[in-house]
Amino acid sequence: MTTVVHDEYVTLKSESGGKLSVQGSRFIAVAHHAGSAGEAEDIVARERKAYHDASHHCYAYRLGTGREAFRYSDDGEPSGTGGKPILAAIDREGLTDIVVVVTRYFGGIKLGTGGLGRAYGGAARIALAGAAREVRFVTRRGTIAFSHELESRVRGTLARYGARVFGEAFGDVTRLEFGVRASRADALVTELRERTGGKVEISGDAAA
Image (cartoon, rainbow, N blue to C red):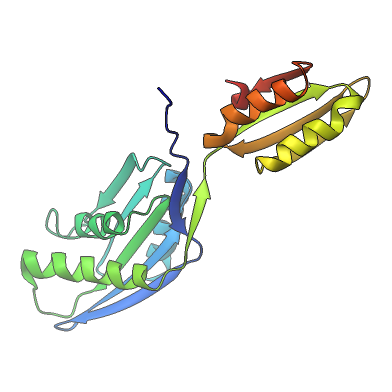
């Protein structure tokens, strides 16, 4: 049975923002690509500094090509009213490698837990609605070594599978470092070996 490899995911192409006012409180949201927890936390720290006089900075992020990692914070708001609605807005869009920070300036009127959840989630949705998205792919990398007379066959096969060559080295044999979409890696390696009669050496993740 053939194993299906899911190697694409959707994230943000550029930063996007949004604002929402509810009974005097102002909610300022920013949505940003984040490739790691450290990068997400840096963006949270940036927003805290930019709006240092605000009442709260609630946030959530979702990470990983399988959307497996996440974190959210209510930053002093009642439990479940800030970070969780923001994360729900992210998940509603099916996004990953993203952080959304919603800053609140308290307007003097308490909104209640339901009102807070709607406000934080609503501000996050506004920011995400205006965000440009892009599809990215999980890649596998490898190195292929071959004799010079096989070069046209090797390069032609790499090109047909959309593989990208990152580095080249020439000597008694040619060595190419390449990357290819994970879902195409097995078929690429098989064809490379078939078209060269097995006269290539392939190593790295792509050959796994």
